[in-house]
Amino acid sequence: MKAAVLGAPIAHSLSPVLHRAAYQALGLTGWSYQAIECDTARLPAVLDGCGPDWAGLSLTMPLKRAVLPLLDHIDPQARQVGAANTVVFTGGQRHGHNTDVPGMVAALAETGLTGLPGPAAVLILGGGATACSALAAVRGLGASQVTAAVRDPARARGLLAAAARLAIGLTLTGFGTPEVAAPDVLISTVPAGAADFYAERIARHTLAPRHLLDVVYHPWPTPLAAAARQAAIPVAGGFALLLHQAARQVTLMTGKLAPLAEMRAAGESALSG
Image (cartoon, rainbow, N blue to C red):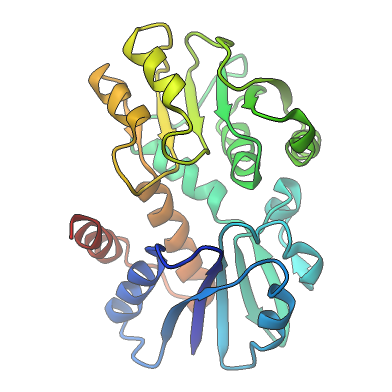
């Protein structure tokens, strides 16, 4: 059986390392997993080319929203978020899932965060598809209100729509403004370096989140993560998110419990190399 990760750019992806490690540990000798460069224009043709020998696809930027109208079924969480990062081929049909949300919850649990009170302060950096998943993750942890720092509010319509579907309050603010001084959790969904303003605030002790999730996994640590660690703030990195969301993809595609320890070891080895 075949599987792959699609995105643009995709050459840097660690997903093949994780999925192949899972197949090896599970004894799935006939399975393969590759990285395929694919933008939104190519996506319909790539999907059409996946025959009965394909188990599923992992999707990254910029495909998580673009794939939705190309699917036969969308699971409730992916529909609420407005983004699917996983396609599973079953019975000749395309089923869309979102494993980023449970992946974020699991990554934050590694920092000791397993729940939030309804009035908790939450700050999300960014307004794209990953930010929508972050909304769902903190909603699942109990948050009822979120502040999102975005560069262009006009491009945050998808985030506002996701908040409405999730029934969670959302306040948009400018990127780089001192909007929340002490959030219970700060989730950065922006590229490495884009959150340096917030790293400087943590270093100056004008921003003091209780927990931090930075979705970047390379290069690591980001300035934001390094500043948080220096301030003794529990940090979850993008590798933890990638690992846990990939484990759920493996289970969806193979029907077998993902070997998390083996996947973690393979990923850490690849990153250290």
